[in-house]
Length: 77
Image (cartoon, rainbow, N blue to C red):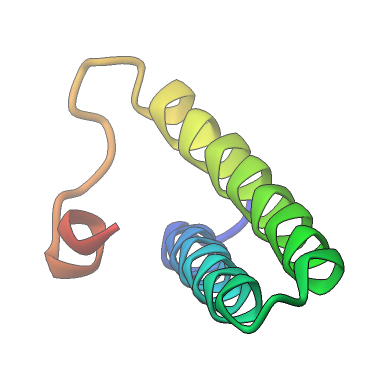
């Protein structure tokens, strides 16, 4: 099993990348470049799907019983 901190950082990176790609899509759409905006939104969606998969993995690891340690990075994620 991967180190918990590594898993959480991967979640944060994917969530941040999703946000960044979505904001890029908005900027492109405002400029009228809808093809590129659509591509950026598709990229954002892929990052969101990956982040969701990681989040589901973390929930499964905890099993609702407080098995995962709670620290600042866990709370941030």
